[in-house]
Length: 281
Length: 304
Image (cartoon, rainbow over all chains, first blue to last red; front, side, top):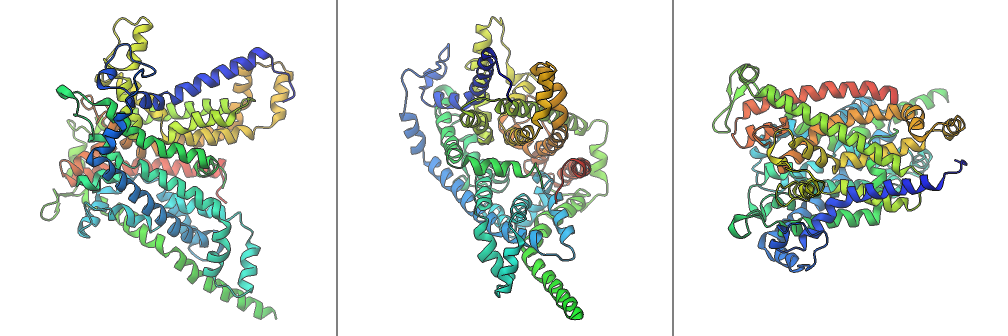
């Protein structure tokens, strides 16, 4: 716009934007601030906005609890293997949907779009019974194995990206004697690095956040991820049964840090992946 | 020559089908095992009585009859689910639209603002809910401290009130993935609004609010509609992750949404038949909304 914006409008715009930033980010700041308080500091009135006597030892205390590192390890196992499965299987499944013409392709794609909308909770009981019959309850298998059989949303993201790669590259490789698999493996996959990063990030943050599936499938404390551990970890450790909020917030900070760093280093990929489901085809 | 081309084309088409289905096979297996079979099996289970011991007992439509009987909690559960969906969708859609509008202002440091607006929405929901519980705590919480400072004589017990709990649910909804996702989608849609329209409005001397109402809103209305439907479908999925750690369905059954009811019935009271009947009801609700979305996306969005 060429129209001149008056100074006071500019000031107002910045004021609203900064106020909104404070509002949005305050909970995360509050987690951080309370993670540095002592147990008495938590119940201090008025609440301290900036902890005057930061208790960095809270982090040491949380990390030295036997459960914490186990929860962390379990979360990482879920993140790594599910992401691996998502990248491998979803990209393979997406290739023919973007490139090959054959009977049934449209039906398959429609089914993939449709299953994207089915809530997990409507499928969970038969899935539970299925994995129970495999003897897989109380293990990571019910969560990891399905990821190796292509998840609809990831397939959709890969397909949309593959469509933007010129088909002439496939044809050239086919003429050179490549098989379809060769075309996918040698030509398409290397060119599709951005969407691999995007899906990787989305899958990693999904599994870092996931609460429902581990709650259903995991019983043993030593197999619980951080999300489930956070529910029980430090509820009752204070004196006279009060909640140890400071430790709980320090525990929460361990879960806050990775997504924040991920955004700092890969905001472009996060934005693209997050949007792709909604905007243009 | 002509014949040969046709034949080789046909050959290519044939081999494409074999190759295509080979590539699709991981999805086929996954779809049949983890989606197709569960959907059909849910219908069967909903006609049985089963506590996981022994074999399921066929009882016809008994579970549905119980659910739809006058003293059943189903209507309460559906009502709560409706309130949750309404609160969740309205809050996330309005908030994401507001943030997107702000990000489209001509200001500097946009990347920094986007960091502060977006990062809170990609945090694990358990983390944000536990922070909300602390912030809305009647004794320790900063919310009641601020109300106290503002002169409110008797700040409420948010988590203990069956009506005020929805305020907490609404605030917690802001810090979920939906908000960040829709913020970026709205943000892209706002960039596509033709500049000439704004210039024309400026020449007419319209102020920014009336420009927003008369130019921006109509231009992004297809996206607004689309986002609202997607957010509705998403809310059925995200309701458990938000409600379970935040309220556990309470106080009483004030926030006991259907996803929580299914979880409790199936994995805490092991009433598989009734839990499956609830799952089937939820599936049908989502199917109706999904059909609506396909109709909408035909008009507003094109999947090539």
